[in-house]
Image 1 (cartoon, rainbow, N blue to C red):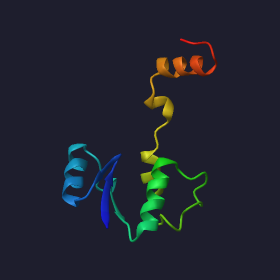
Image 2: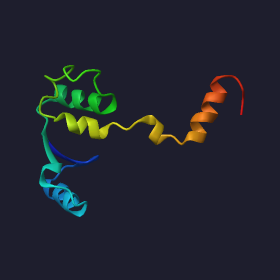
Image 3: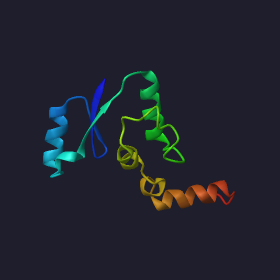
Amino acid sequence: MIVYNVKRRWFAMKGAAEQYRIREKLPPDATIKIGIADRTQLAALLDALCEPPACSAEGVSQVAAVPERVIDNAFVDSDLDIPKFLRDSWARLTAGKGE
C-alpha cells in the first residue's frame, strides 16, 4: 500500500497530494511517499503517529520507509491542542478544588 503525506495531511492519490502541496506553496520535497508492505509496518506507523518513540532508534526497523519528519510533523504538543482555561479547570478539578 502506498500513501502520501504533505505536512499533517494524508492522501491515497499522488495527484491529490501534489495539488495540496502546490496550493500550500510548498517545495516538491514536501510530498512524502510512504510504502507500507504489511500489517506490522502499518501498526508501527500508527503507533509512531500516536506516540513518537522515546528515541529515534526505537522501532526503526518496522517504520524504516517513513522519514522521521513525518512523525515529527504529526506530533502536536498537547498544550497547543487544549485551551489554557480548560487545562486550568482540569488541574483544579483533579486537585480537589472544584470549579
